[in-house]
Image 1 (tube, rainbow, N blue to C red):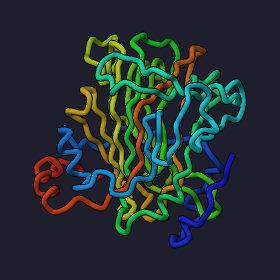
Image 2: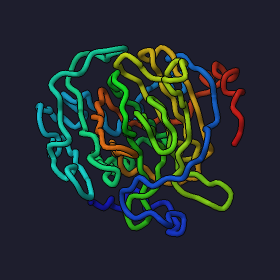
Image 3: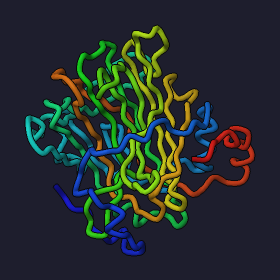
Image 4: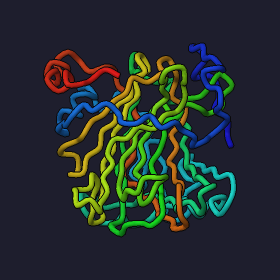
Length: 332
């Protein structure tokens, strides 16, 4: 497990107590219940929130064919290409071949442009979690002045066949404590497939944030959608095998965390937020993640285009245009 350097956090005093209970890369979280609902947004409104320049500071972007660092990816085992590394404490996930580049993306509903994709093999047991990570601490430290809102967006594929096991796939944007140990979920999202914990759901969306509830501060998970296919309702994710767009942000100035997802190719998004406890923390690392919560059946996680970038707060014109929707926020 690597240790993130402290150069990017030197200007911020981070209390070790604030990260009590965190030691290295982990998937421990506290159940925070439902997130605050912001409502529905068009793709144009999401773009307006990001300001006139969508990627004012590009920390890292890839379509898994090339990336912003000039890497050209070849199909096959991914770790070692483009600075991507992996971590798994035990089990079959310790093999680099569980993290790979697929030469062809799956088709299906709302498929992104043709190209290569990244695939993580599903976790092999309920005691194993797999991580594929990219250190972006140096890019964050060198970002343009005032670009204090970190954004992450990516496409994720989910197969149409329901699983009898609980698989959790997605990713976390981590912060680091003053020693360089990875700890806080600045923001994150997962799609949960199959039976997860005590809740039998086939396709659910969750958001993650470093958060304070009462006297407890730590990594929390919040429900964004939770729809059982057996209920006869419409799943929030593509039900015939398809792609979901996920967008999330962390505001370093305020600690606020936003999450958005789209099931129609980015034309419309559903948005949520919480007032997180990470104000002042610096971005350290992005981790793609896969775990098994229950059962024995694995599910591969497949990802399309991926970007981490930073922007300033939205300009006045953008805020005026969004005032009606943003007024619907219920403060936590």
